[in-house]
Image (tube, rainbow, N blue to C red):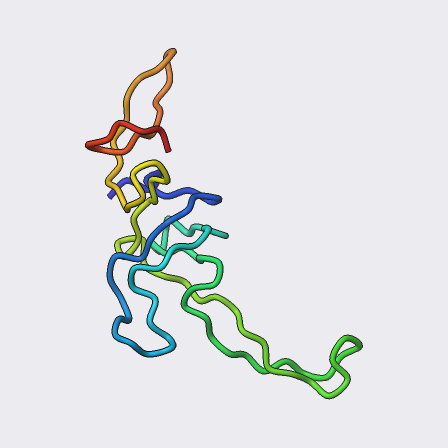
Length: 111
């Protein structure tokens, strides 16, 4: 698997994972990639796969609080989102001006 398929800042769609009608379902939802860990093969996507974490008392929260933080999602469960085609796409590379550029397979739109 190419590690450059999904980069920080990309908009991605979840193609598989926790599905169904539950509140925690995120299959088919889109979000912005906050971080990618290519070694572990995971990415953190804004607003998806949220986990609750208890925070100790501090200046901002004198009584402590429960915050939601995004947990990692496997890169194999994500696809880059093509805004023009309005769907998740596979990625290919073409040479333009002596450098590689990511494009959507099938549509040829730049990502």
